[in-house]
Image (tube, rainbow, N blue to C red; front, top):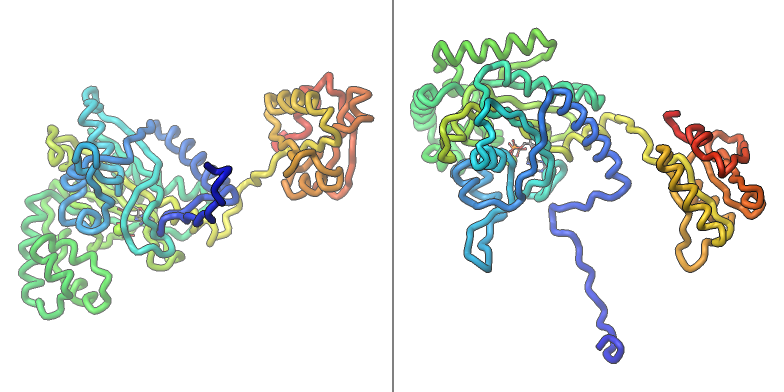
Length: 437
Ligand code: ATP
Ligand code: MG
């Protein structure tokens, strides 16, 4: 068919709004971050978990909460055309992790400490630090009730930011106490807001009936004074809740983590109890919350399982990477150690065998490849070697090969120094090419 019909000009298809390609120039930063995360998680003995991206919509309606922004207006939900199931692209991973823990009875022999990294989906207005597909790193400790776990999780975040070389990140804390304490606070809150109903915006009017705690979360400047004067949850906490919170703050202080109480920190999600926290920067404009989390002892029950204590956090990876850029954090260069220059295709068998050995020895090496048939002139190959950022060129010229040698030419130190090395003894000189040799 393609032979006989004139080809119609194909329309270009671009990425969906709010969903981004991560190109090679950026992906080295992502990988550097991920590597730090893996080291950190293993140093805390957290194992990784990967749950499905598509889940039953009910998991989030129950697990995230019907009256949250996420469930009310941000979910990508759809009906499976083949069997009519109601499905959703995960907007967050905590319900998925807890769902998996319940389904596979992960906490049967004590607690489990887990982390995940992956894409989440929320239909929000895209802007700096806010996307429709974004990536979260998260950690969850399931089956542990003690306040020391709240602290362990916060320490991880603190230490990760330090290892990444980030500065000036605030830790804000609050306690949401236990359900009866929240109920008493809620009653006081509702009556307070009812007395000032004239100041409430439409969103808050609605929340007054659905989820009054969320009014404290408002970003509306006209309501700030009202919200400042609202009854505080902390003053409704009883002894046990206060003791939990007091242990959290004193352990944090003992570990050298500065913190401050933010009585308005209530977090958007329904499932929290006791400690809630956020890590915030002032250097990313309105999207300054890098990480948020807390204790959610009620979630297992809400998903139909027996009560199980749990605490965790989620972190927006794009925001963290952006802050690294804003603060000028340098990452190691992703450039290869060496670039193989191949004057004649006849050399390819020797070239490819040699590069195999070099890579086995831990050298990173990029082989020259032509854009069209043929390999191109030496001049153009050296130009490519230069733009690759490699510190050495390996020249597999006919002269060299006749002597079973390769020329190693220095590209970066300005000396242009070159030495011939024997192909029969690659492992001997391979370490001289490595930046960490
Ligand atoms: P925000 O108040 O900024 O909307 P949130 O309370 O909805 O955040 P969480 O559900 O707690 O966020 O998610 C944890 C972290 O994930 C946030 O602190 C943020 O760093 C990141 N995050 C949340 N939504 C987005 C998004 N749409 N794009 C990029 N990162 C996001
Ligand atoms: Mg949000």
